[in-house]
Image 1 (cartoon, rainbow, N blue to C red):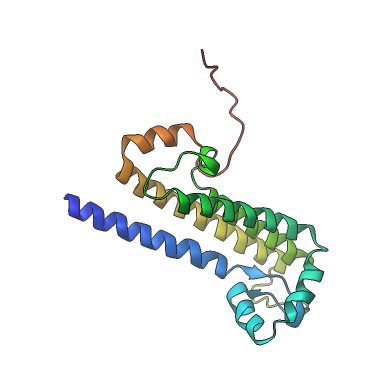
Image 2 (cartoon, rainbow, N blue to C red):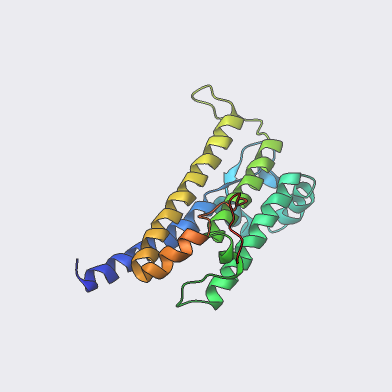
Length: 195
């Protein structure tokens, strides 16, 4: 493939990754609160649309949600996302290797995983009364499977982004990728001491 073909391919990968990473959380289910309380959970896109019709539901929801520990986990994820996003925007046009990118290569996807995990815990606390259950599977299992699907989608998006960055930055990215964890930071047990 020639140089022009690589540039087009990289641009398409970049655009599709950006669109996908934006769409996945929009279809995350929010807990049944306000007008939804006791009925069902809805994707956040539907909630936002109805919020503009009745902004008063937000205060009710906030009072309700801050009684549930999962809300705080979701806020930690949201805070990490905002921090990583601001850091990425202010350091464009280069391979970012500091800030949150010093610890993981994909802090925004990690933030979405943490955020949706918190939202999933909240959804467990706000079990719907009307249970759509065509396969006789518990709603908890369905909600958990939705979250696992989202995690897998973010991992795939991270791998696609790795491929795009590898083709753009080549050896520089390979050195960075060998030093920094993919998405989930863990302790390095065999860390070499600097001499």
